[in-house]
Image (tube, rainbow, N blue to C red; front, side, top):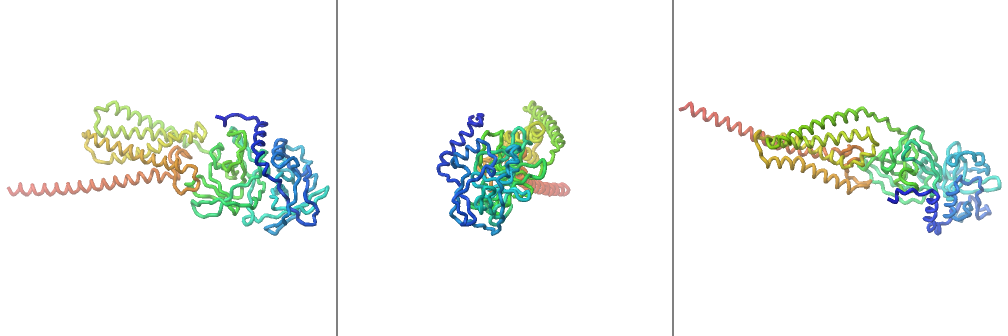
Length: 508
């Protein structure tokens, strides 16, 4: 209930500040490195021209975290060390940002050539490449009234450094309007620099990637996805019209994704960017948890052809009417039916629900958004039940029976077989779905009712539908074989008996 309340932005900032007051008491302002001991200064004041284009609210947030003298950095007593042993020198002029003052603030985060964030991160631009350098990866060699000279340690991507493409600038995240899914932009947020979870390397289809604790920084390069429209991948299902997937960032800098634990991992191509996201349709405030990591991928989803769904939907609805009429007719004549008629009723009921729920699965994309499937999970479970039940009634119909038999015991057996077995199968499947829900690294194939289809997911269809039916078909074939053998022996015995009787009659 409370999560649906609309909180004014001014109050949000106050709440964020109050939340961080206790944390801020234990935080010390970051220290920067000097390149040479000859630099006779113990601190440096970053001029306004090299400060980020923060809003007043964000600036106030950082003052609460680090103090009022926000861009006054002390120098670290430690010696600067570049792991790659490869450095470049850049002179940061003190007039670099003034020419962009007319630009919107969100654009300035990218267009401004250089700036220092309150956490000491340095934004640089070299040859059109925009990078955000962690304080551990640069040192200051000189500063005057006209410029600041820094030596930047070039990253050794895949070795000492993890290099990732970031969609937005430092101090920004992606912004997505839930109601206007094509409107994607960058939004300034008062939050610390992003340090995404990093995982160890592993090999194999269902590899379990273990998270690792790293003190080395992540090197971010700004990159715009070079295609429009582009696909958005998110680990949560709260981002409307996005492809849901598990995301793992490895120590080598590879970004791996897979749809669910049932599916194989795939490595992303270089044409991607990743960031955190603020979904305006879900909450007013930004949640920095890993579930809000998103990837913009140059793999635009193809336009869905709804012709097939329209044909299937119409066909299944019409067919379900005939199945329902069959049930009505047989129920109306219930007292006059034998076991054959009663079995037809059970089969027709299963077929009716199978057709209706399958039609729902095809029709949901025609009339509503795709995420309605997950809200109709009960129908999806019913679809899985009815598909199995229909197949089992088909198996039952293969068993020989007397046309005039009114065996209630056999009807009970058919009902237990046609409805009982699917109940057990679906109950086990639901229990597995619940038990392993949210487990992204399990090797157990989950049924995933309603995940992508209104039934068992394609990745687990073999295990929860095909295998069950094949096992039961196998038992039925064995039973049919035994019956055939018995009938054959009976026929042979009948022939021998007839032959014996004929001989006796001739002899008489």
